[in-house]
Length: 417
Image (tube, rainbow, N blue to C red; front, side, top):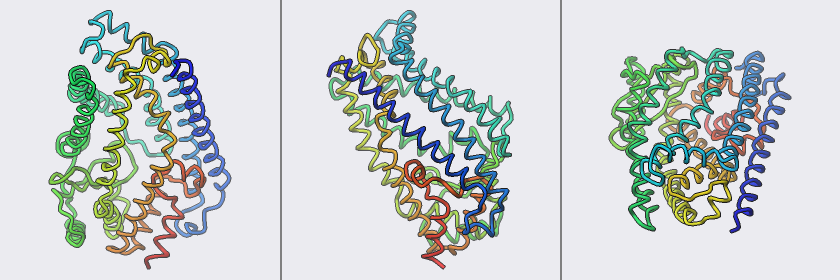
């Protein structure tokens, strides 16, 4: 392929992705604004007009921030490619290290990671200390924010750099089928993270204490027995240190599975409702949703690594994206910079698949607890998290991993009484 033609193709794909994303975001903001003055009938008895309007304002403010982030991310990619930013970083690293060496490649990709972090930093600060604070969600102190950033940086050094070094070494040492070896390492690394996250990484950021409420613990253990789920323990996480948002989740894999409740969730919901939310999460386990996702992502990632292996041998891939020299590290950087823009078209498929999983988990919960308890829990979570009850159907169909509130609750009420 001629380099100019590939450059044009990338610009068209990036422009199309930008227009579709921005158009859908503006459509969502307009739809939410239009419906802000009337609470949907299904929620009229449980959510006040004031709470509904607060959710509309929160949604609109988040969209405004996301639009700016979208524009900046596009500019960042263009600066790194056609603007010569990646070429400049490579030359800067080459001034200190042998060009093309393993150390040079690691330095280049680490510098790119730092640059990306610096671009994202203002948005993270604004989201946490302005937007989330404005709506009463932020509990994060400046000291805790800095502490988290330092820990994340240390983890990137301790885990990320050795992984990056290993990948670049495999790319150089394993011949034309290096991508098969790298894919195997990537797959193994993801499984390892699932195993070590609950016991080694998550406790670096949050405190996990065994569930102390004996009444709730008895109910939960009874539910687990009915559902045939075995875990390494029930834990409460101090989510309130950072945010007022509430959640519950499973973490780990195999024998290291844990059930974790945010303390904010336990404060907001009744024991019946906590049990129903947990039953929903158990529904994901029962239907093997994580395994199904991995079964799709594993071959898809293999295909992407094979594509990368082929692209690294094509000069037009490098010159078409504004890079003068080829190489494994700079090729890897280019690939992961432009890949999200090319795969954006798959977003609605993944969103649809995720929503199907949520419906299946809801149905499972309704068959093991009272559907009414899950409905009242969801209503409280929508209200307390300022989630919009009136998303635009097209936006929601494209982006949302969870079904719209009204549709989700209507299905629960219609199928389980």
